[in-house]
Every structure is written in structure tokens, then in C-alpha cells.
Image (tube, rainbow, N blue to C red; front, side):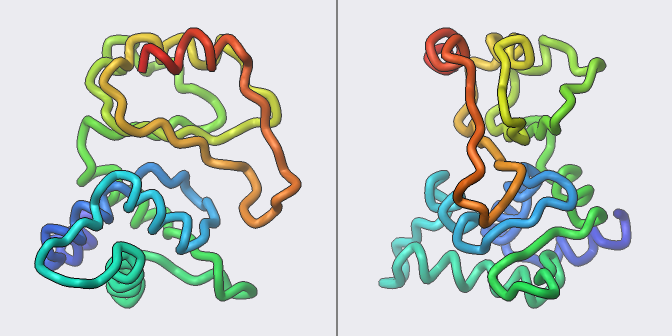
Length: 175
């Protein structure tokens, strides 16, 4: 990671912000470029008053810049899918700092409930059925701006996951 940090330091401030946000992408997660650009747009990262370009166009340009610097890799058999190398993912997690958190399928036991108070951006990998107990600790995460559900299968529109209604009724309104 220290050697890769040199590549990160060479980025513009905007690209640093966009790359840090990518720490929400789980390791070995295959994603679509358009999805990532939409996430950036939803966060307000692509507003630029100095140009007439659309947010989509700006997002495309920023993505291509990160891709050309090998921050992302194209999936070999599909030109529309991308992945972050594990080391790049580690770098994104490192530079993102303490306000970002990614919860993989198993919530780590060593995550203190107090830590949830400071998080602004979180993502989680979806299981087929998401139970309330997994998200009980989120009750303290009342400063979240992002609560991103990452589907297990990208590109399969038939794949669905189900959230407990208790999560929707009790937890999400508090966030």
C-alpha cells in the first residue's frame, strides 16, 4: 500500500475524493461503470460550475482517468464490468479514513457500537434474506449519508434480496 500511495498522491483533489468513495466497494466485487458514476452523482461529487459538461460526462471522464491509472481493471470477458484489485481496495480504505465503513456478509465482531456514530458512508453486501439482528448496531449510526446495498450478483436482474420490514420501519428512519 505505501508504494501505491504515490499513485494516489498524484491524483487531483476531485479524483482523490472519488477514489476514496470506492472503498465502499467490497473486495473482488464486480461492478458496472454506470453504477459507480450514479453513486458519485447521488453523493454530489460530480457538480462542476466551471464547465457545461453533464454530470454523466464528468463521471465518465473521471472514471476513464482512474481506469487509465489502473485504479480499476476491466473484467476479461465483459467490457461493461470492472473490478478493483485487492491492493487498490486496501488503498481506498486507507485513504477514506474513519468516516467510511464496508460491512461484508459477516459483520465483524470487533466493530464497536460506538464506532457507528462517526460513520457517514456505509455499504453492505446483500444476502438473500437480511435480518434485523444484523443491522441492530446501525441504530447508533445516525450521521449516515450513504447506506449502500451491494447485490451479490451484478448484471443478473432476476436476483433479489429481502430486507426485514423491521429494518425499514425501525432502523432506516433513524439514519
